[in-house]
Image (tube, rainbow, N blue to C red; front, side):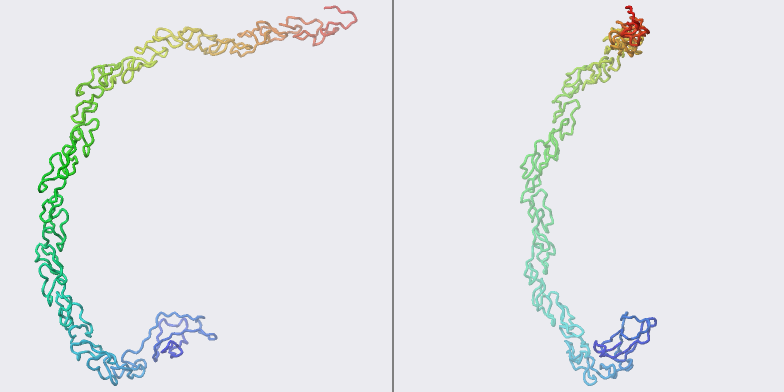
Length: 618
C-alpha cells in the first residue's frame, strides 16, 4: 500500500507490504497505520516471474476488496498518530509539524490572531458584508447580520432582496393588497395598482361602473351597479333582466328571461322577450292569443292554428296534428290513415263485427257487405232455413240422417248421413262394396257390390255364387258368373273351385291346365300329361288319356301302346307277319334273315337250299 501526492505509486511512500498472510490466515478486516500524508492511497498487487509466493497464492493477480477506509487526523490535531493539538486554533496547522498553514475564515495577520476589519468577513477577509442594518454587527467568519437587515433585504447575510409583495427592514412588511407589488425599501406603489384599484397609493376602488386593470373595463348589466365587483367585474347581487353570467354580459338564451335569465318562457311561446317574458316573437305551433295561452280550436293545429286536422282523426294534437285523441269510426293507426281491417269497425277499430257478417261497415258495424255462409236477414242474425246452407242460404243440404242437423254454415251433417251416402255433406253415394248409414257397412263378399241402402245383393252375385242373397255356392260341376260355366276334367269334380273352376286336386288323365280343359300335347298322355306316347303308326299320336295308338303300331312294335317289340318269329306292322321258317329269327321291322338261316338254307331270306337239288319254292 502506497501513499502519494500523485497517481504514480513509485513517487509515493510504501506504507505496508504483506509478507506473512496466507489464503487461510488473512483476516476479513485488516487495519494498518501510515504516519505520512498525501493525496492518494494506492492499493497494489502483483505476481512477478521468478518470485516464490506463499503456498495458496493464486498464480495470477486478483483482488477481492469490499471496502477501503482512509482516516486522516481530525481538526485541531497533528503529528504521528494525530496525537498533538494544534498551537493556534485560528490556523490550519501542518499535519506533521503543527505550523500555521493559513488562516481560517474571519481571521488575518500573523498567526491569524486578528479578526477581519469592519464590513469584511470570510477566507482571508476577502468578502464584503451585505446590507446589514449595522455593519459592526456583521459576523467576521460567515457574514451573518446579527441585528438584522436594512430596508429592502432579507436573509442571514442580508444579501437577498425582498420578494414581490414585501418591503422594509428584513422584508418584514407586506405591501398594500391593492398594489401590484411595491417599492421594497419604502412600500410605495411604484409599479401600479392591482385590478380594481386606483389613486397614488392604490387606496381607492374603481369608480362605479368600472373595474379591472387601471379601472379601464366597464361593468356588465348588474342588477345593482354599485354591486359590480371592482376587481373582476362580477355582479355580486346578480344580473339585470335579460342577462346572465358572472359579469352579466351574456344575453338570455332562447326560452329564458328575467333577472339572471332565471325564468323559463311560456312553453307555448316561440321564445319570448328576454326582459319581461312577453310572447312578442309569436306562438309555438298549436297555440294562439296575446300570451299564446289559447290552444288551437278542435280540428285545427300547427303554426297560428292554420292547419286542419285529418278528417279521419277525432280532433288532433294542437301542436303537430297527430291523432293522439283517437280516430273517427272506421279508422286506425298513428295518423288514422288506415281503414279498419276486415272484421273490425268503430273508433280506432276496436269493435269486432258480428261473426255472422261477411265483414261489416267500418263506421257503424252494419252488415252491408252481406252475410257469412249460413246466415241471412238484415243484420245476418237468422240462420238458414231448414234444409239449406251456405252463401245466401242458396245451397241444399245433402242426405243427412237428421235434416235439422245440417250445419247452416257449410252443410255438414252433424249426426251423420242417411243410408247410402257418406262424406261431410252426405252427397256422395256409397262406393262399390259398402252400404247403410255413412256407408259404414261392407257388402257380403259373395255379392257383386250390393244395394247401397239395405245391402241386398240386387246387383248379381260374384262368380261362384247363386241364390237371392248369393249365399249358395255353384252346384257341383259348375262355376263362374251365374254358375254358367262347366268344370273341366278334374280328378275330383267336388274339388272344382266354384269361383273360377280351378281343379284343386289336379286333372283326369289326358288333361292339363288350371281348369283341366286342355288335352295333353301331341306325343304325351296320362295324368298331368307326364307320359310319352309309344311307336304309333302316326308318329307322336296316341290317345291322350291312356296312350293307346289309335292307328296301330309302326313295324317292329305291338300292343295298345306300341311300346312292345315283336316276339321271336314275327315282324312288320303290329308284328302281324311271320318270319320265314328257314330263318333263324328275322328282323322285326323288315323280316330279313339278318340273324342267319336254319341249317340247310342260305340266301338273303334263306330261300336257297345248300344241296344240288332244286329247292322248292316256299
